[in-house]
Amino acid sequence: MTTLSVDLAGKHGVVTGASSGIGAAAARALLACGATLSGWDIAEPPPDLAQRTGYAHRRVDMADSNAIDAAVQALEAGSARVDFLVYSAGVARRSPATELTVADWDLVVDVNLRGAFLCARGLLPLMPPGSSIAAVASIMGFSGGLYPNAAYQASKGGLVNLVRTLAVEWAPRGVRVNAVAPTFTETPFIEGVLSDPEKIRRIVEATPLRRFAQPEEIADAIVFLVSPHASMITGHALPVDGGFLCV
Image (tube, rainbow, N blue to C red):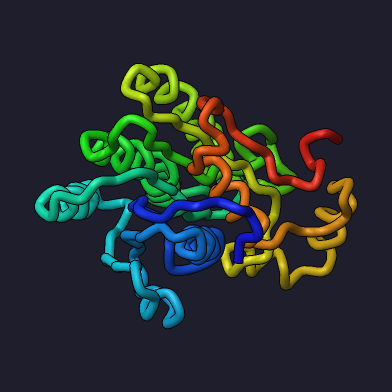
Protein backbone atom coordinates (compact mmCIF):
# COMPACT_ATOMS: atom_id res chain seq x y z
CA MET A 1 0.00 0.00 0.00
CA THR A 2 1.24 3.47 -0.83
CA THR A 3 2.94 5.51 1.87
CA LEU A 4 2.59 8.74 -0.11
CA SER A 5 0.49 11.54 1.37
CA VAL A 6 -1.79 12.03 -1.62
CA ASP A 7 -5.47 12.94 -1.46
CA LEU A 8 -7.37 11.68 -4.50
CA ALA A 9 -10.83 11.83 -2.94
CA GLY A 10 -13.43 12.68 -5.54
CA LYS A 11 -11.18 11.53 -8.39
CA HIS A 12 -12.07 8.68 -10.71
CA GLY A 13 -9.61 6.74 -12.83
CA VAL A 14 -9.23 3.78 -15.15
CA VAL A 15 -6.54 1.19 -14.44
CA THR A 16 -5.83 -1.40 -17.12
CA GLY A 17 -4.09 -4.63 -16.21
CA ALA A 18 -5.68 -4.20 -12.80
CA SER A 19 -5.99 -7.89 -11.95
CA SER A 20 -2.35 -8.65 -11.16
CA GLY A 21 1.17 -7.37 -10.69
CA ILE A 22 1.89 -3.67 -11.01
CA GLY A 23 -1.65 -2.88 -12.13
CA ALA A 24 -3.19 -4.46 -9.05
CA ALA A 25 -0.66 -2.73 -6.79
CA ALA A 26 -1.46 0.60 -8.44
CA ALA A 27 -5.19 0.00 -8.03
CA ARG A 28 -4.77 -0.73 -4.32
CA ALA A 29 -2.60 2.35 -3.83
CA LEU A 30 -4.98 4.67 -5.68
CA LEU A 31 -7.97 3.35 -3.72
CA ALA A 32 -6.02 3.93 -0.51
CA CYS A 33 -5.63 7.57 -1.57
CA GLY A 34 -9.41 7.94 -1.86
CA ALA A 35 -9.92 7.54 -5.61
CA THR A 36 -12.61 5.43 -7.22
CA LEU A 37 -11.59 3.13 -10.04
CA SER A 38 -12.75 1.31 -13.13
CA GLY A 39 -10.46 -1.70 -13.46
CA TRP A 40 -10.05 -3.18 -16.92
CA ASP A 41 -8.40 -6.55 -17.42
CA ILE A 42 -8.88 -9.70 -19.48
CA ALA A 43 -8.90 -11.62 -16.17
CA GLU A 44 -11.07 -11.35 -13.08
CA PRO A 45 -9.68 -9.21 -10.24
CA PRO A 46 -8.30 -10.67 -7.01
CA PRO A 47 -10.93 -10.89 -4.24
CA ASP A 48 -9.49 -8.04 -2.19
CA LEU A 49 -9.98 -5.65 -5.13
CA ALA A 50 -13.32 -7.03 -6.27
CA GLN A 51 -14.75 -6.44 -2.80
CA ARG A 52 -13.37 -2.94 -2.33
CA THR A 53 -15.78 -0.03 -2.17
CA GLY A 54 -15.11 2.29 -5.06
CA TYR A 55 -13.80 -0.38 -7.42
CA ALA A 56 -15.74 -1.61 -10.48
CA HIS A 57 -14.28 -4.26 -12.77
CA ARG A 58 -14.81 -4.93 -16.45
CA ARG A 59 -13.35 -7.75 -18.52
CA VAL A 60 -11.50 -6.07 -21.39
CA ASP A 61 -9.01 -7.61 -23.80
CA MET A 62 -6.48 -4.91 -24.69
CA ALA A 63 -5.69 -6.69 -27.95
CA ASP A 64 -9.32 -6.21 -29.05
CA SER A 65 -10.06 -2.69 -30.27
CA ASN A 66 -13.80 -3.37 -30.20
CA ALA A 67 -13.63 -4.37 -26.54
CA ILE A 68 -11.76 -1.16 -25.70
CA ASP A 69 -14.33 0.91 -27.59
CA ALA A 70 -17.16 -0.82 -25.73
CA ALA A 71 -15.52 -0.14 -22.35
CA VAL A 72 -15.08 3.53 -23.21
CA GLN A 73 -18.69 3.78 -24.40
CA ALA A 74 -19.92 2.23 -21.14
CA LEU A 75 -18.19 4.99 -19.19
CA GLU A 76 -19.61 7.61 -21.53
CA ALA A 77 -23.10 6.18 -21.08
CA GLY A 78 -22.68 6.50 -17.33
CA SER A 79 -21.52 10.10 -17.67
CA ALA A 80 -18.27 9.15 -15.96
CA ARG A 81 -15.45 11.64 -15.59
CA VAL A 82 -11.97 10.18 -15.92
CA ASP A 83 -9.36 12.10 -13.93
CA PHE A 84 -6.55 9.67 -14.70
CA LEU A 85 -5.67 6.64 -16.76
CA VAL A 86 -3.07 4.11 -15.65
CA TYR A 87 -2.19 1.86 -18.56
CA SER A 88 -0.56 -1.19 -16.98
CA ALA A 89 -1.77 -3.97 -19.27
CA GLY A 90 1.12 -5.81 -20.87
CA VAL A 91 2.30 -9.09 -22.32
CA ALA A 92 5.66 -10.52 -23.38
CA ARG A 93 6.78 -13.32 -25.65
CA ARG A 94 10.40 -13.93 -24.71
CA SER A 95 12.28 -15.61 -27.53
CA PRO A 96 15.11 -14.83 -29.96
CA ALA A 97 14.03 -12.55 -32.80
CA THR A 98 14.73 -15.29 -35.34
CA GLU A 99 12.21 -17.55 -33.57
CA LEU A 100 9.52 -14.96 -32.82
CA THR A 101 6.32 -15.61 -34.73
CA VAL A 102 4.43 -12.82 -36.45
CA ALA A 103 1.39 -13.67 -34.32
CA ASP A 104 3.40 -13.22 -31.12
CA TRP A 105 4.92 -9.97 -32.39
CA ASP A 106 1.44 -8.65 -33.20
CA LEU A 107 0.01 -9.66 -29.82
CA VAL A 108 2.76 -7.91 -27.85
CA VAL A 109 2.60 -4.73 -29.90
CA ASP A 110 -1.20 -4.72 -29.89
CA VAL A 111 -1.48 -5.00 -26.11
CA ASN A 112 1.54 -2.97 -25.02
CA LEU A 113 1.41 -0.14 -27.54
CA ARG A 114 -1.76 -0.06 -29.64
CA GLY A 115 -3.94 -0.71 -26.59
CA ALA A 116 -2.34 2.18 -24.72
CA PHE A 117 -2.98 4.49 -27.68
CA LEU A 118 -6.60 3.39 -28.08
CA CYS A 119 -7.38 3.72 -24.36
CA ALA A 120 -5.78 7.15 -24.11
CA ARG A 121 -7.45 8.46 -27.26
CA GLY A 122 -10.80 6.94 -26.37
CA LEU A 123 -10.86 8.31 -22.83
CA LEU A 124 -9.55 11.78 -23.70
CA PRO A 125 -13.03 13.30 -24.22
CA LEU A 126 -13.90 12.25 -20.64
CA MET A 127 -10.79 13.85 -19.15
CA PRO A 128 -11.16 17.41 -17.83
CA PRO A 129 -8.24 19.86 -17.62
CA GLY A 130 -5.92 18.71 -14.86
CA SER A 131 -6.29 15.03 -15.76
CA SER A 132 -3.31 12.79 -16.32
CA ILE A 133 -2.15 9.55 -17.88
CA ALA A 134 0.54 7.26 -16.51
CA ALA A 135 1.61 4.39 -18.73
CA VAL A 136 3.70 1.50 -17.46
CA ALA A 137 6.65 1.35 -19.83
CA SER A 138 9.88 -0.45 -18.89
CA ILE A 139 13.61 0.00 -18.61
CA MET A 140 13.55 -2.14 -21.75
CA GLY A 141 12.12 0.87 -23.54
CA PHE A 142 15.58 2.41 -23.13
CA SER A 143 17.75 -0.69 -23.29
CA GLY A 144 18.40 -3.65 -25.55
CA GLY A 145 17.95 -5.75 -22.44
CA LEU A 146 19.77 -8.67 -20.91
CA TYR A 147 17.77 -11.33 -22.76
CA PRO A 148 16.20 -11.69 -26.24
CA ASN A 149 12.80 -10.01 -26.14
CA ALA A 150 12.48 -8.02 -29.37
CA ALA A 151 8.72 -7.45 -29.46
CA TYR A 152 8.57 -6.36 -25.82
CA GLN A 153 11.54 -4.00 -26.11
CA ALA A 154 10.14 -2.48 -29.31
CA SER A 155 6.67 -2.02 -27.83
CA LYS A 156 7.98 -0.36 -24.68
CA GLY A 157 10.30 1.91 -26.64
CA GLY A 158 7.31 2.90 -28.74
CA LEU A 159 5.28 3.53 -25.57
CA VAL A 160 7.95 5.88 -24.23
CA ASN A 161 7.81 7.97 -27.39
CA LEU A 162 4.01 7.79 -27.57
CA VAL A 163 3.96 9.38 -24.11
CA ARG A 164 6.18 12.21 -25.33
CA THR A 165 4.04 12.75 -28.41
CA LEU A 166 0.72 12.81 -26.58
CA ALA A 167 2.16 15.05 -23.85
CA VAL A 168 2.95 17.71 -26.42
CA GLU A 169 -0.30 17.28 -28.35
CA TRP A 170 -2.59 17.28 -25.31
CA ALA A 171 -0.84 19.90 -23.16
CA PRO A 172 -3.18 22.64 -24.46
CA ARG A 173 -6.08 20.57 -23.11
CA GLY A 174 -4.48 20.49 -19.66
CA VAL A 175 -3.88 16.74 -19.79
CA ARG A 176 -0.49 15.47 -18.62
CA VAL A 177 0.97 12.26 -20.07
CA ASN A 178 3.85 10.39 -18.42
CA ALA A 179 5.16 6.88 -17.89
CA VAL A 180 7.00 4.86 -15.32
CA ALA A 181 9.82 2.61 -16.49
CA PRO A 182 10.18 -0.21 -13.98
CA THR A 183 13.09 -2.57 -13.69
CA PHE A 184 12.50 -6.30 -13.13
CA THR A 185 9.67 -6.35 -10.58
CA GLU A 186 8.67 -9.32 -8.44
CA THR A 187 5.31 -10.18 -9.98
CA PRO A 188 3.88 -13.19 -11.84
CA PHE A 189 4.78 -11.38 -15.09
CA ILE A 190 8.43 -12.45 -14.67
CA GLU A 191 7.74 -15.86 -13.16
CA GLY A 192 10.13 -17.49 -15.62
CA VAL A 193 12.96 -15.20 -14.56
CA LEU A 194 12.29 -15.69 -10.86
CA SER A 195 12.55 -19.47 -11.25
CA ASP A 196 16.06 -19.26 -12.75
CA PRO A 197 18.86 -18.60 -10.21
CA GLU A 198 21.35 -17.67 -12.94
CA LYS A 199 19.01 -15.03 -14.38
CA ILE A 200 18.38 -13.65 -10.89
CA ARG A 201 22.12 -13.39 -10.29
CA ARG A 202 22.73 -11.59 -13.57
CA ILE A 203 19.92 -9.07 -13.01
CA VAL A 204 20.97 -8.33 -9.43
CA GLU A 205 24.57 -7.82 -10.51
CA ALA A 206 23.42 -5.39 -13.22
CA THR A 207 21.42 -3.36 -10.68
CA PRO A 208 23.35 -0.95 -8.41
CA LEU A 209 20.83 -1.38 -5.58
CA ARG A 210 21.33 -5.15 -5.93
CA ARG A 211 17.71 -6.25 -5.84
CA PHE A 212 14.49 -6.52 -7.80
CA ALA A 213 11.71 -3.96 -7.38
CA GLN A 214 8.48 -4.61 -5.52
CA PRO A 215 5.18 -3.77 -7.24
CA GLU A 216 4.27 -1.34 -4.45
CA GLU A 217 7.38 0.70 -5.28
CA ILE A 218 6.20 1.09 -8.85
CA ALA A 219 2.70 1.91 -7.62
CA ASP A 220 4.04 4.76 -5.50
CA ALA A 221 5.63 6.31 -8.59
CA ILE A 222 2.34 5.95 -10.49
CA VAL A 223 0.39 7.62 -7.67
CA PHE A 224 2.86 10.50 -7.71
CA LEU A 225 2.63 10.99 -11.47
CA VAL A 226 -1.19 11.10 -11.55
CA SER A 227 -1.41 13.32 -8.47
CA PRO A 228 -1.30 17.12 -8.21
CA HIS A 229 2.23 16.77 -6.80
CA ALA A 230 3.38 16.15 -10.39
CA SER A 231 1.40 19.04 -11.88
CA MET A 232 4.40 20.42 -13.81
CA ILE A 233 5.62 17.05 -15.09
CA THR A 234 4.58 15.83 -18.52
CA GLY A 235 6.21 13.91 -21.36
CA HIS A 236 8.62 11.96 -19.18
CA ALA A 237 9.27 8.31 -18.38
CA LEU A 238 10.39 7.94 -14.77
CA PRO A 239 12.79 5.00 -14.29
CA VAL A 240 12.11 3.04 -11.12
CA ASP A 241 15.06 0.79 -11.65
CA GLY A 242 17.49 0.70 -8.76
CA GLY A 243 20.07 2.36 -10.99
CA PHE A 244 19.90 -0.22 -13.80
CA LEU A 245 20.02 2.39 -16.56
CA CYS A 246 23.02 4.15 -15.01
CA VAL A 247 25.37 1.24 -15.61
